[in-house]
Length: 231
Ligand code: CA
Image (cartoon, rainbow, N blue to C red; front, side, top):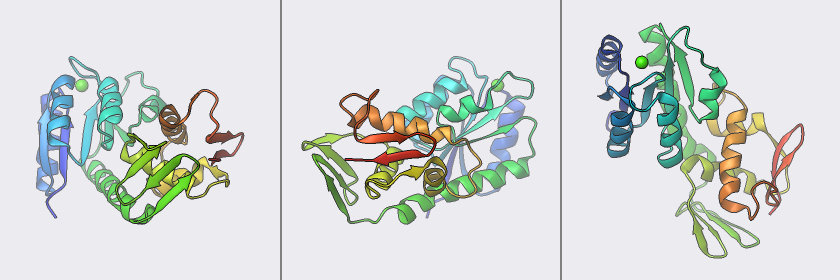
């Protein structure tokens, strides 16, 4: 297996160089960008295994870059935030960031958390999905072999995380799953994020599979618990 690719998007030269140096020493294949626009372009062309993303960036800020990465590319995003910046930590996670660290940080801690995150994302496909299963519920079909979801034979384009979440709920059709159960299944035990990450992904899926996403009939909310796939 080749070395994991990491894209570091950070405008402060001393931090960028220190991070790039440390991660290269750790055996990662490291790329860097010094503004949000360049970061997003490089994320698209390199498709790294993880994006390390500063919040305050020229051209496009880290929040915007994170939003676009999650929308188009679904790559794991690790946010860096400066001490004293007015950042609602949850905001980063609601945008779909997988983890964050506050500056100043220890390089050791950063490396440990990056390794954990890479481990989680590589565990996903093997542990959550069986690789040859076809689920058909009404006019919806989920094919784990080809990773395709269709409604009335029309293909629905889901990001990998959305696919896994939909599969998890659909393979437990009629059963309510709590946000914590979902978070643990899809993001792993060590994930110390916010359960609202689940809500955000549910919202994205609903926009793709529901006739009326604001009043869902397939993927329903169970108040006080979580979600259930009805069909
Ligand atoms: Ca910055």
